Amino acid sequence: MNTKRTDPITIKPDKGPPTPSARMTVVAGAGCYVPPTDSANNERLLQSSPGKVPAELTSHERYILAEARRILGDLMFRQSDALSHPDTVTEYLVHHLADREREVFGVLHLDSTNRVIRQRDLFEGTVSTSAVYPREVVRDALLSNARRVILYHNHPSLQSAQPSQSDITLTHQIVDALATVGIEVLDHLIVSGTHSFSFARNSQIPKSDIQ
Image (cartoon, rainbow, N blue to C red; front, side, top):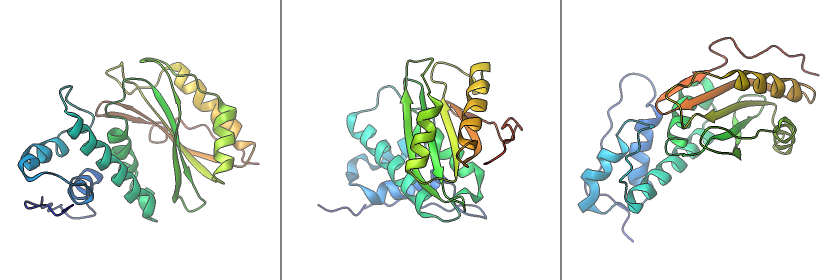
């Protein structure tokens, strides 16, 4: 199968490293077969606003998006400085959770140098809630030998990424539970469409005594 595009997309980023969405546009074309007749439509699809997935997508277009997200995730995991730019993680999660119709809670496992070890979507619920068990978050982090974690979940039925009181309570519970085994919570990110909320940036990650 010929995997070379006859009309490659050229990305000319501004100063600094290319954004995850720019990387995704490049690698999606290189990482899977895109029929030349569909190239214009696929370029439109991949460069559209993250979090806004048209309802009329064909199965082929959904495959392209899924491959782009997978490759973007692989890039983030391979880069030792992946978390030196906080927006990298946020933008990746916006794409990762873009077309989820149910609430998903997950965790990024990190080592002591903040390299991503593993990503896990741990719980999936209804359109508005998901049952999250702190003990399972702890168990999964220990299995990955993580030293730090970033929590994340989405608000698929809301127009706001602002945390609810239950989100805040859950964050405190998980921070306390992970502290007992020496694992630090760096952030809890909430995604709703193209909007996001960072507990860390808003000084809402409680301090804990790591044992």
